[in-house]
Image 1 (cartoon, protein in one colour):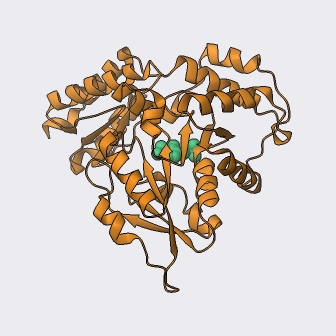
Image 2 (cartoon, protein in one colour):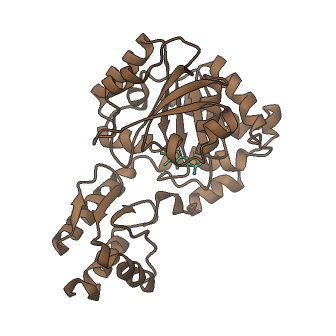
Image 3 (cartoon, protein in one colour):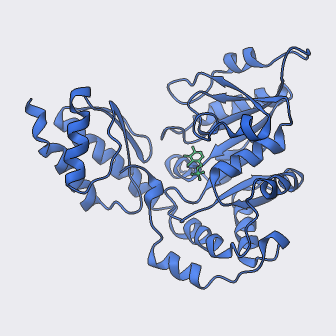
Amino acid sequence: MRSDTVTRPTPGMRAAMAAAEVGDDVYGDDPTVNRLQAVAAERFDFEAALFFPTGTQSNLAALMAHCGRGDEYLVGQEAHTYKYEGGGAAVLGSIQPQPLENEPDGAIAIARIAGAIKPHDVHFARTRLLALENTIGGRVLPPAYQREATEFAHAQGLRTHLDGARIFNAIVKLKVEAPAVVAGFDSVSVCLSKGLGAPAGSVLLGSREFIAVALRWRKALGGGMRQAGILAAAGLYAMQHHVVRLAEDHANAEYFAEGLRAIGLVVEPPQTNIVYVNIPTQHVAGIQAHLAKRGIQASIDSRTRLVTHLDLPRTLIDQGLQAFRDYPGWSR
Ligand SMILES: *Cc1c(COP(=O)(O)O)cnc(C)c1O
């Protein structure tokens, strides 16, 4: 339950990978990579797409395509592109992050964005980009906010990037078509290796011109892969077969949350496939050890994140709940 990244390729996905037609993608010759890029661009209604080995590299190439040296991007304190990517934008991109507090729903208040845009003055970095994330900590960014924030950013002359690592969870939750959840963004990064279950890979979406710049940065960042069609085939399979079923992960998250509440734990209502539960600090180490003994891998903390996914059918969810119930330390 550590993450939806632990999913392993299914037999059908492995068969698709084994059968993939391949070529040298650095020359643009891999037909399966090209097909994945075309399918993704069409599905999200973008001009172009580019396949990356990881979401971290896809986000970084996007930031570097939008921002130059001495530019800055506005980003949430909790955002992956700020907090969980090794500081890559600053370290490798010479781009200054301007982190801003996230609201409880994951949004960044428009007033905060407005207040952080720097005047044109030699004292300041040039504010170029607003970066948002959906879903963020399992929460779906409110569609009305998405419209308001991207319109505001564009009116201020900023560009907009969406870290849509788990965008398919938002699509399934909102019951909308893909283009609706990415409307207003100049670029979007989508992970295929989270709940979709591919072993690796992300897709960056943007205009033809933007993707041409991102392609240069992908090469510079070491992301030019050769017979990458084997991985792209997994991504194509995932987009075809593993999107609708995300609803099961969401239902399992709700079910798990209810079960934990019944034990008396405080659980945040899950919106998609991520459950946050408060574990009293005196039980953190005990529960971690108790679950490990049952073969359950979870990162227990005072605010524990538990993630449902493809490889966790309801029977395993029940075993997980039973393990929480059985923890002998509750009575202490
Ligand atoms: C996982 C993730 C990424 C990218 O992760 P990689 O492990 O580099 O593929 C980016 N943003 C969010 C929100 C993520 O969850």
